Length: 219
Image 1: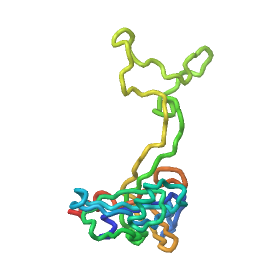
Image 2: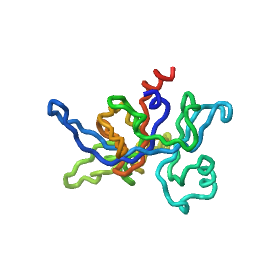
Image 3: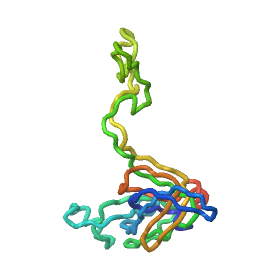
């Protein structure tokens, strides 16, 4: 897994299912369609001050991109790609512009970190957003689901910044770490990881080897 310890892949969440083992026990897994990703730029210490590789994913019509974006992709010979993501690596010399990376960089049984965008919930109140308790539902109660007091009166005469309150919920970038790779289908570019990952079906995700594996192999 030397290659897997240096970079990741972009893909889309397909959904969840379950797979049996030799004992008949069912394991919940998330199916991710990964890549293929194209190397669109290689950054080295000599040219940029650090080692990194930029990957592109999901081909789109040219009209969907701006001329600067098309010009950037043309330097590597890559087709018009919707998503670009940079991954820090220890040695970028093992990559070349235009190189295609697939699920073959991962192996069964290794641990990966999956990053995605959580499902957006819109504007929500304190009970759903922060787990506040509701008020009495009996006759005469005037605070069924209201937030209640937000602080003292005259002193300090204001609400402290950072207090929990209603607002937008979801739509945040979150990472699920140390997920075990249960199976890989290289022909269909599918990766099955144990457990759940952030986001809705079809959402963009980034998969790379877990931090502990990367720190050991890049030491």
